[in-house]
Image (tube, rainbow, N blue to C red; front, side, top):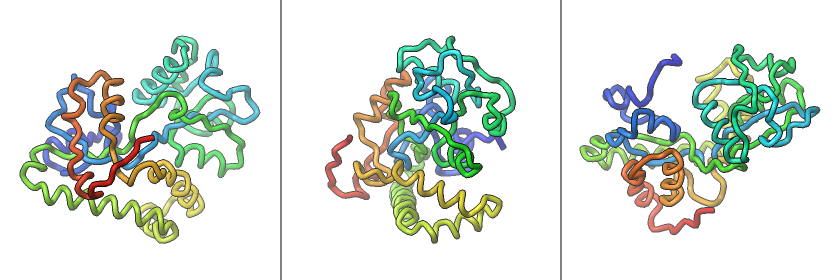
Length: 258
């Protein structure tokens, strides 16, 4: 359900591992130090804006006076931050509070839509529309995405078990990106309703965001992590990160962060 909270479930011990975005970790005054981040699936933030190709919207600088879907609070936050990064005030855009139905974008009722590279742009392109995709990572978003999080006490209690879970997860991602057709078969088993062509495109689109050549899968650069968390106003961001396992798994690789 939409109300399901990964953070609450982790804390209650219902689950031992979860996926979260950086803002999820700071929802209650930074009091999240019972949880730790042990890896990140996406090296590059996969959030995007979409505008129709036949419009004059080419970057966030062109959003003034345009309507933007107010999809949820996370996206409203991202949009304000994006506009600030390009020197605009978020009062210059028109928030659209209508239903979050992609058909409304296709009909031209909303100028700018937001989502993730593998999802909405994929859907719209497959419906035969020409869209312009605007990547947030070009506008000051250094965020990692799909952070793998667990409870600090679990690491203290069973470090080997946690490390093993992380290692197997990262191996799984590596294997799935190298063997995409096999991965599609596996996904269809769990999500039979989405067309195979959609799944194939989605996997192709996320690949460079997960495995981008600058770092091994799952890697978190400490300096970059601290910069991201500083942006969110988190104090002691290094205490939210436990990267010993990543270093163990990948040996003594020295990673040059891009």
